[in-house]
Image (tube, rainbow, N blue to C red; front, top):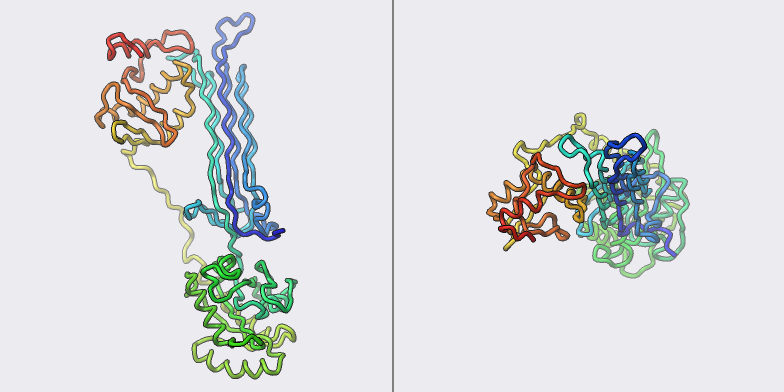
Length: 460
């Protein structure tokens, strides 16, 4: 059974908002108590939060569906519905959230970093909140807004300062174990390491982390071996160390060819050209390996590499290597420090931004915008008064004016929203601000009265 997972697809669903309540106060000696319906509660959010104690995405591999609770509906006597609790998903530092199409949503690094994956729906307003001097006792309330549903890809990219790369059985795990307190699995067969191993190394006053990246062989960037699964863990490392096996008994292999093969895979993966590199010629405790290391060292130095002859078994050369890595890590950290204080860029909306758009699509007009679409979702279309209230809001926003400018005429088909749009035949029968609202609760006399003007009394 898998114990380390670094990529999962998560299906998140925010909670629905609770419906508002349409209620009128009815108590002894209070015949005109007025509306007292409470608001619905907010639905819960689904939130990703970095937890320093979490190192894998295994939990979401076994349970990829996460749904927050729904808000409670409002009640009479001004009782608001309870808000639902948020679902907090604890993820490792270095988790990147993307859409299934590859668009980056968030890059969570450092304990406490968070991102709202799916927002809960707003609670609907009760009729007490909807009352006004013009509409003293509304006979309707707003529905709760549905929660947001999103599919996101969680991808873990190890946060380490130094990455040890090389062929299987080159001794990378042994180097991590020798330089730190980490105790990875070590054996004398290829692909012993199936997950990245992290170790903390101290060199003088510098403390940094080292990651052993397993599974790199020729063709790794195209999916061979384990390389494609774990090359992503190299991306965040500021220093690369090529660990070359000088004691290999495989025919046709030598340190120079191994280095060229791994460098080719790193180049094909992309984005790693600017990383400083060191070369560690490992296993020099073997006599023949020491001789081979002395032979290839001048060749590597001619190519511009800084070369260290090491032995993970006897710890020879590890101290010099650790200080060299520390120097490069400190240089990378200084280069990454901002030259000036971080600024927050605020981009205000344009003064002429109406918050919605009206476009002509074949024989229909489509209205898109955050507010119009939310208002439609919160409208109870079985209640004429609620429909009249929606029409008032759309008219005040300027939707009717934009429809006329776009060429809409009475009877034109109008859609508000995207794929799940509300479709209706548009008649500009209700002007915002009409004063005469004397109609029974739950009805709106304007709907039929104004419609007759365009249908000759034959209202639909």
